Image (cartoon, rainbow, N blue to C red; front, side, top):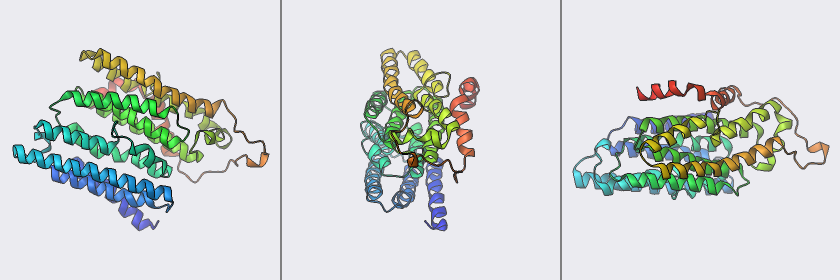
Length: 348
């Protein structure tokens, strides 16, 4: 792709998200989401592969549906209450519609079915943008909506953690596994959104760090399926040693960074007398942990079934920048002791 066009598209991606962040009016927020969607479509379809074009079409249709529903919800709210302000959305019908529209845009269950299919059709770099940056704008709006019916967020959260854990169990494609992982993590965020928005922000931050480092590892190894992970020890032994820690951090095992948000969310749910919900979500985390352990096992304890010496990959110097990966890997593994500091910073 022409570097000028690429720069324009990336600038538009940033602009769309920034407009949504900065807006207090529903029309402006909707416009930011639309710019965001239109900017990523050429990036998704740049391979000219039938799978990429199919993924782009599916993504466009779901995002257009989500944006249209959101516009309808905000117009309904303005019609019924005379308010266009995001923080003033007070009508139950409009609020529920807006929450469902934004859930479709980020890929929360049961509105998640587009996400694994779309992610599977993309290359790992665009997949990284879709799994991280594209979640920010809808989440900024979700944080500002005051839900009139708190049950809907709990139902969305529990369904997402269940489906995210259950759906990833039988997958062999790494991008689909990452899609289900994304749905499960978003479920945890939505669950605690109404009780502690700062905790949702903390979870989103740790999710972005862990997902980015995982995608960068897969990109460096050029791995797209579990079998391809088995050859990674020949390409980068040091990274293969650290990758299981990144995956287990995604699964939420102590003493890694991923344990921090899960621990605090379960604590918050218990404080709100939602012990059955907390127990159920803790059990769904085990489902997710299983497929992360499966990836870890494939990477560290199996050897690729290649008998021919010639198929062993050469250990060449990579052209990819490894500094971001190094920083993100350290953050994914070592941030748990900083929990009190991060909580203090987020509650300021």
